[in-house]
Amino acid sequence: MTVATRSVTAWMSEFVATGIPPTGARERAATAVCDTVGVMLAGAPEAAATIVRATAAADSHGPCRILGTAARAGANDAALANGVAAHALDYDDMCFVSLAHPSCALLPAALAAAELVHASGRTLLDAYVVGFEIECRLGAIMNPRHYHVRGWHCTSSIGTIGAAAAAARVLGLNPSATAHALGIAASSACGLKENIGAMVKPLHAGMAARNGVMAARLAREGFTASGQAIDGPQGYLTAMDSEQPASALADALDDLAARWEILDTGITVKLYPSCAATHPPLDVLLDLRRRHGFTAEDVEAIDVEVDSMTPRLLIHERPSTGLEAKFSMPFCAAAALVFGHPSIDTFDVPLIRDPRVQALMPRVTLKANAAFDSAAPLSQAQVTVRLRDGRTLAGRADGARGYPGRLNDEELDGKFLACAERSLSPDAARKALAAVRDIDNVATIDSLTAACATVQYAA
Image (tube, rainbow, N blue to C red; front, side, top):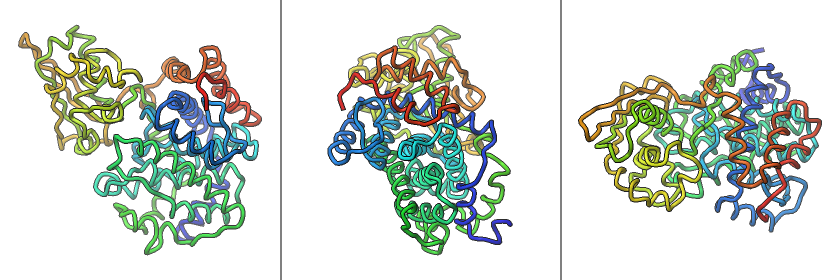
């Protein structure tokens, strides 16, 4: 039976409930889980995460852990808190099909659901994959208009549907209940790009995770939704101004379980804690500095050419906060030359105010080059550095470090430990890494979350 002979929601729900990911897809998911648990632990001490956690802990008590802390909460609130922490530093992964940060909503939702039913690590990985695939099929027809033109933040607007799918799979919902979960989630989706650079941006991830878990839990108890909530004439796709009409979703779903987007295009792990659009230029700039040995003081000007979408994201020319700095090409370029490889601490306010950085930022220009628009978004960059001695250096990027096939185990483990040690002792961080790396063999996810709860910071 094809999509044409049944509703698209029924087709998606059947896949979510029964699809069997191949081994390679599960391995990609395990990498994403490792990376995302690390950034959750790094984000736990951040102000946005702390505020949300305090609210969640005050309003809810339950069996689910808020990673990097001693706190527990109900499944909905734990998903919210962990989602905010995962996205608080903008260090979490990217998907260039959905144009979302997939894992910061998928994983907190799946973790919370898994703790409710003591699911295995294998179950969580399968849930992650099916949620990821649903997000990609939606993103393929909704974008670029949904994200690029209309201002929806796909991490939340599409991520809510993915999170509901992942939670439904973990909870073992049948296809009928899963369909209702997706319909409920469709009315819970949200997220405005106008809030990029504010605390609300990581809140988007938390809300997507929370709303996804809530949708699956409600559906498990018999709560119902319209069978056309996603593709109906007044449904999700139409209301969110999809690039292609709702009828196009059937074609996008036709290869579910036959082709796996997580294998074809994969997940991009960030090796810099800034907007993904800054990564190709940063790779080029750091490579030029390494090869030619110049310093920030040697630079007359830096010209960065990117695709047309990037300037809509990197909107802060003169940032004053860490969140703004992550979306500032002038700051990221200047800081990379002054301090080297950007780290979490690079975006602290004292470093933003560093006189050397402030002196260089006005000499960084960012402009769109329409020739880059035919490639994957946020992946192309041309960087030209003009030095005071008259030399001109240039380089081109096609993608960035951390893209699928460009990430090694040493980089992943190193990032995890550096992130985890913001919430755990070094010994606890190493134990947490070992637990996460063994996720495919974990009998219940509780042992993994417990390994991430030895804390230095109070809840």
